[in-house]
Image (tube, rainbow, N blue to C red; front, side):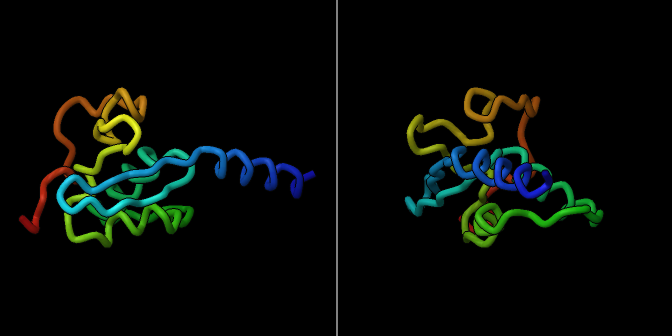
Length: 104
């Protein structure tokens, strides 16, 4: 039964595809799953020095390797910030630490 559950999880994750774009340089990133939640979780672990019980998905880690602030990225089809409540469904209640652009 656990094999079927794992396959269903992967199928669910693969159907949640989001294209995110850097507003500064236009580079695009294809992500899967709940990218906003994974981004926030990874940023919290990174900033707090905490530990996590699971790996951050590779497609989300690529956002952090980009030279521009990943928190400012936009969801391509809507043009809205991917961390906005309208796109992610998450209310961050103000500015998010990952939204500053250190390179520009």
